[in-house]
Length: 122
Image (tube, rainbow, N blue to C red; front, top):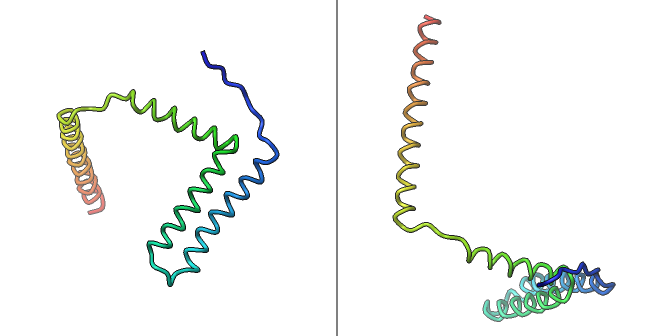
């Protein structure tokens, strides 16, 4: 049995988030500053800066909480029973037929209202 213990963020968490923001800013500004360089060098630089920022973010309490949430979400998604192709096609056909029927009904109501209004005005 696991117990969830509420942990308080440390004083360094704020500094770590500032560092994360700085690394992201460096990635963006560096990509613009080195525009003359080949795109793949800039892409590698951005990926490295973002990876370092992610590692630093995961060292904070909120980062660990976000990672735990993502793991739990992935576990829940695996529990979903997805519809088969046949079920999806049948549902799509039903929805399309219903849309056509409603469209025809609204067209008929609109036509009757225009006819009645024309009868009243004329």
